[in-house]
Amino acid sequence: MKKIEFSKEEKAEIVSRIRAYFGRELDPIGALPAEFLLDFFAEEIGPYFYNRGLRDAQAALSTRMEHLAEDIHLLEREQKF
Image (tube, rainbow, N blue to C red; front, top):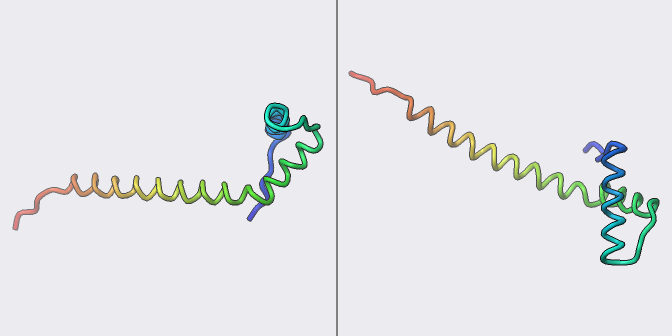
């Protein structure tokens, strides 16, 4: 699996959110430790979220395909023999 990477802007926003969370709920955390924590989550835990997203997308696609098959069936015309 390809490594999960974020743009500089995304990474800055996520680090800011991590720091804000720590400031509210735990002890304040610096930018570098927050970045290390983000890297840890992206590498170690990110694949779980990524795979769940893939399964959710597959389920949504399957549902849409079932509806499409039903719609196509409704378009069929009666054949006279």
